[in-house]
Length: 412
Image (cartoon, rainbow, N blue to C red; front, side, top):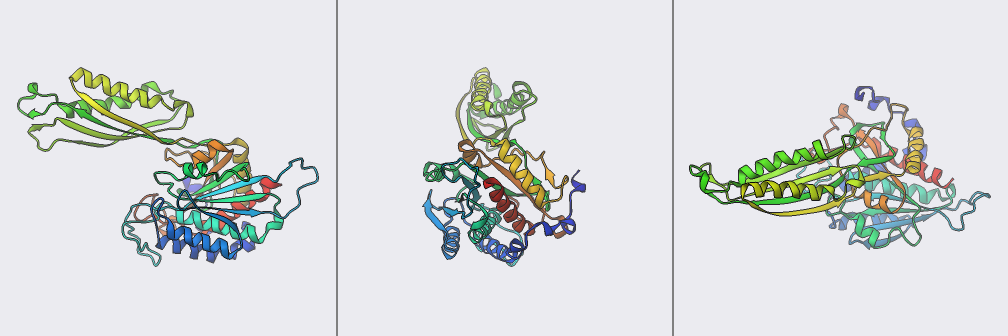
């Protein structure tokens, strides 16, 4: 299936209007500047300053310092509403873009390589910010083409601990009240010239837990005098896999992954403690609270059978990203005008990765979608969070085109 997707030479850029195509060099320049100055979550001071400076230069109303470094730009359309419109006030559409980078040392040797040691835009958020800036600029110059209000939300700290929730708590969806929201993620799991969009669950809920097994240490030759925390931990890791296999409906996708397991100091010493950390992912919102309970039940039962005890900590990071059916259809019909169909539209694009766009989608109907950005022909296909991650910047103009068309169609 993937081999039938368009390659870089077959992408039809004539579908992008001339005024946005002419903006492409500026989009690339903005993205590369941001890429050179990556900042971690809630530390995006230079990024926010750059965004704010551009918005001010273009005469766009803005609020700064929201949830520390977040910005909301507001653009009011000048187009008169249709005569049959019964809405007492203009509708409001929000567009969300995240700005933060990751604690990764970049290995790309490019002119725009990160200048901040140990920090890198390895997930495309520099591109998201550039696309949002391009959208803001275009809409400000073409206010006669839409009748409502557009709020562009530049959000900090998506990677963690999460900037969406504090921005919502600060009131970014109020005054005026947002009716719907859209957002995109540049996606190197899809090639340039494709868009991944679907109604319902797109990305997974993200939950985590830490557990310390408290046994009794001793000599490796005298196991009967001990409570071996390694044996207990090994049985727990295996038993946790039965949750998805035997406790979750087979039609519901879920993952329980123990990514860390630390115990012991020497081969002939039985460890008194073993520590594990894990991630839990699922799509179905009705599973919220289930894994917390079931994971601890398994840990408690195995520890009791071996005479061990445990310390357990469980927390939820992000709920699943659930797209509204009508908003997903709006994005899909718009995307069909920008990329070649049917191969350019990828409805089966779910991923167990998580995103705090989910908090916005819990508050108002909306759609989050993937914009294909990989180009193996240019060696631009490394996965997200890889130290050589980069993407085909042709996708920047495509992102602006899709956002602009969504605005125009939403208000029509």
